[in-house]
Length: 251
Image (cartoon, rainbow, N blue to C red; front, side, top):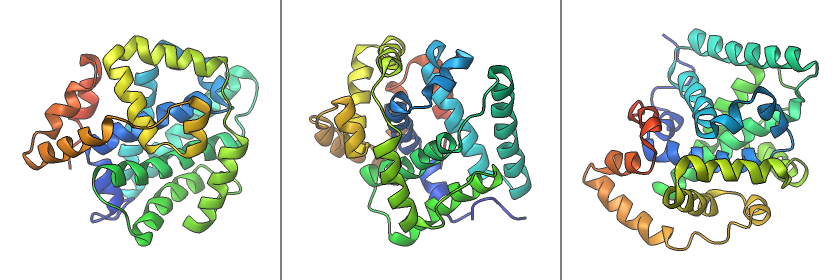
C-alpha cells in the first residue's frame, strides 16, 4: 500500500500533533485575513459566518490528504478542485492560480514554524519533505508556476509576502469575527501565537507586536506535554463547538 506521505514522515508528526495543528490554524487565520483573494471566501458567505469552522475545514482536508493512501488522497484533492470550480461557476470568474499557491505556501510555512515553536528546529531535509508534500498537492490541482524545491519556494514565498497581502476591510471584519467567536481571552492568545509564528511582513501589517507573555507560557506548556496533559490544555483554548476538531487529531 502506498500512502501520500511516508509513514515515518515528519509531516505526519506535525499534522498528527493537536498543539501543532492549533498553531497552524492560528497562523493561517492571520494570513487568510490579509490575502488579496480573500473576497473569494467572502463570496460563499462561509468565512464571515463561521471563520473558525472555515479554517478548520482547510485543516481537515489537509489531514485527510496527508494520512490517506495515495489514491484516496488524490480523490480528496480532486474534491477540493471540484468545490472551487463550482464556486467559480457561481461567480462567473476564475480563482487565480496565485491564490491557490498562496494557500499552499501558508501550509508549508506554518507546518514548519508551528512545529519548530513547539518542539525543535527541523533539518533542511525535513523542510524539503514538508515542501514536497504540498508541492504534490499543487501538482495534482494542475497549478502553474510552482517552485520545484524548498530553496525555490523560499524565494517564491518572499515574493508572495511582497505582492499578495494587504490590510483591507475584509481584514478588519475577519478579526472582528475571530474575537466574536473566540471570546476576549482566547482572542488575545490567538494574536500572541500569531505574533510568534507569522512571517515578519504579516506581523507588521497586522501590527501584532511581539509574543510577550506567550514565551514563558510555551515553556510551561512543553512541561505539561511531558506529563501527557497537552490535549487537555489545547481543548481549553477552543470554544466547545470546535473541540471535536482537535479531538480527532492524535499522533
